[in-house]
Length: 136
Length: 139
Image (cartoon, rainbow over all chains, first blue to last red; front, side, top):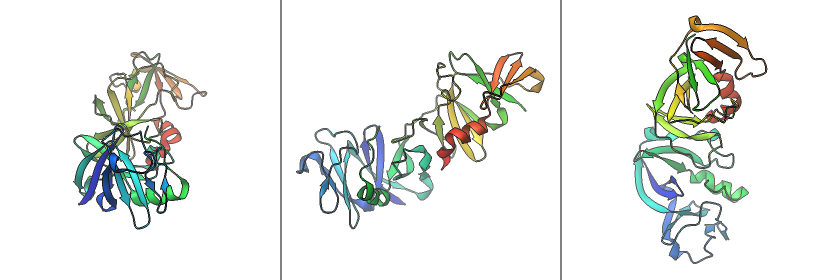
């Protein structure tokens, strides 16, 4: 079983492997510029293309690897899911925009799909070539 | 070959596809949008053990005037399933029901027009259509 933190961006439920989640903070706790909480290791980068602007009281999910931190604006943190490997479906690359290679799997909760953001892909990709596109 | 006909609501044309490749016809399945998806991907739905991409064929068939309904044809090409929404689904028909076949060289995705007792149907070369225009879906 793998554990995922499920959160919501716009109309979509996303999730990330819990081992990559460093912290979940409220927007009020973000003291840097409101639209700049992407931590590039040594500096904050603009994150306004990661999703629509959060409303007051919404959260930032801080994802982390050994050398990279990424704050992801989420409309709502919905909880933890334990997912068996057999319940994970691969997301073919062809379904997505070419600039989004980091949504790799999905699983279903409460009848709807939850799209798994693979931080081991998004972290280096963001560091290398900038930010992904906004959720449409 | 047995064929199945369908059309989009208000469509000026009827279409026919190979009935053997029709995996299921679903009425009103839950179709979920996919974030950051390609424009032709309307969403996904669940069917048995599959997650089925739902695509829109209308523009490719030059039939964007037709409206879709909640009816979804799930088509199987090998191990791959793909769904596309349609309007009305006709009863199946076979060779014996076809009175005349007219080849349409200028429309490679609809290479034949079939005149039948039930009306005129444009036969869709689904394999070519899917792999030419939606092949990336399965990569």
